[in-house]
Length: 388
Ligand code: TXA
Ligand code: MG
Image 1 (cartoon, rainbow, N blue to C red):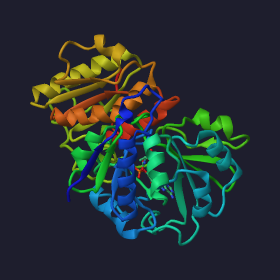
Image 2: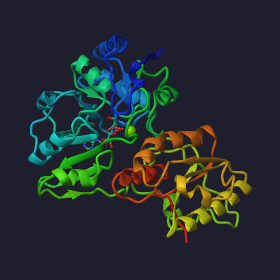
Image 3: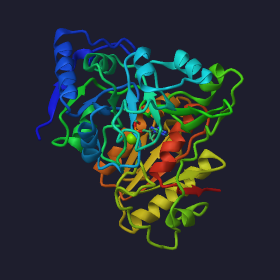
Image 4: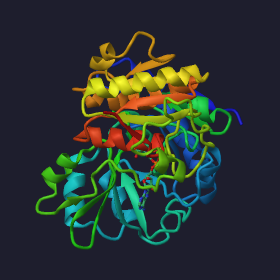
């Protein structure tokens, strides 16, 4: 299959001033919308990450998403809409707390899981559940595409399953060229991490199913009396044995024990995995963490590993020069927005560098930091090395 590529002009813009009303952009978006209506798959930019869209009513089209991504079929897809009127057609009930959250944060990086109206979507979208995750993205290209398609659009992140989510159109092409109908290139995605997924519980509390672009504090600010639960970074999988053993231990140790083999791609527990072995290093002090990391990197290199280090800008001087073959900065610790925007591209850089042994600094799990640590822990399959 040839994947159609549309380069949009909206990239030439001031931050937050995206426009996609140039005639060429509108033509590309109309063409992409026509493909969606015809049952094809199209990747498009959102304010979080690139999504791979298909008509959510069309089982064959939705099936093509799972095929292209190699995604396990029991993982439901988020449905994207352009306006609140479209929501009424999809769900049977909107609890008060959910309505308040949508009023405050739509369009935006918030997905709300609501009771599905039977028969309106392909059952493949919801993996047979009686609920559906709905989101209105805050990106002019996404909104224009959804409006032009005129149908609910199922869209997971536009990466091969197990790879970091795409924050640039080139990431989409790297993973899915030849497997999808087209990609609208609208430049870099904004937040860089996926939306926050929430569900209002029978007791009225707001459960965070996945931390993301909207922080726990932002949710609490508009949830009224409703409690916000489950907002910690801990990912929703049980670490496998190998990871459990590595937890709280500096592994591999300096005695020359070889590092665990790189995980097989597509293992269910690791959603955002680089190809190499990755562990987080957490320390009581930045200097302690850096010392432990530098020692582990040096011994890994001694074993013939290609090494990678993911760190925060101000900690760079704590490492010896050339501490790793590939050193990637997530920007200043004080700017979690920068780290969120750069995380997935950074993980892809380690793959390009052929890194087999990668360490990553931890960041405080507050605000957007919860979502960053959630994704890092997933990428590391739960492995954390505690430094002195
Ligand atoms: O920012 C985003 O949300 C991006 C962009 C493209 O919109 N999309 C995205 O989709 O991240 P995906 O498929 O990679 O992640 C969907 C998440 C999964 O964790 C899935 O389990 C959860 O949402 N989800 C979807 N529907 C659900 C439901 N009915 N109940 C519980 N969880 C649901
Ligand atoms: Mg995804």
